[in-house]
Image (cartoon, rainbow, N blue to C red; front, side, top):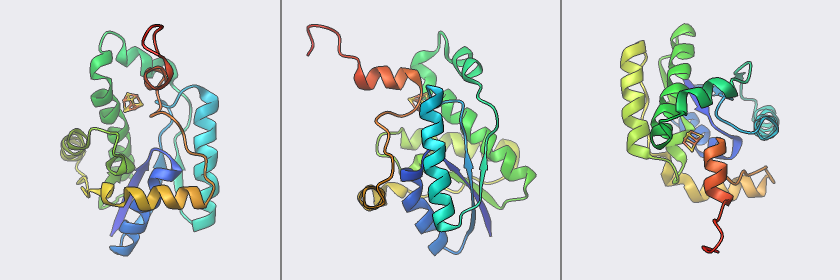
Length: 180
Ligand code: SF4
């Protein structure tokens, strides 16, 4: 069975790749770029994945272009809903590629993160899969959180400090004066 794995970053891919491989899937990766800001951060994450993919012999489709403007335009005035919109964009892109490439399933490393809205990812994935005609493969990859973190550290991988978009970068680092 062929499965397309949307990969948000290399550290988050370690455990899902291990699990899917053990379940007998032939896995191909898909790296989506528009939600990772600024551009140099996107390149850093992409290069980290390229190096890991080469190491483990994983084929990956890397999204072309860098539509920062389109991403932001989609979020403006809807910032509080941004993660749902972002999941939808990323999973829709993955599902379309899976459909074009005749994959049996698609899934996402977003299901690995303890910091993401897990149930929402699942429901968006299911809906997108139904719309496109490729089933979303659900697995609670969070079970391997500690294992994946330990392995990424052992491999000396670049580990980012925030989810991806500039909104998440602000949430991670900005502390208004008086709240320090
Ligand atoms: S915080 Fe992460 S999931 Fe939410 S919109 Fe930003 S990049 Fe997307």
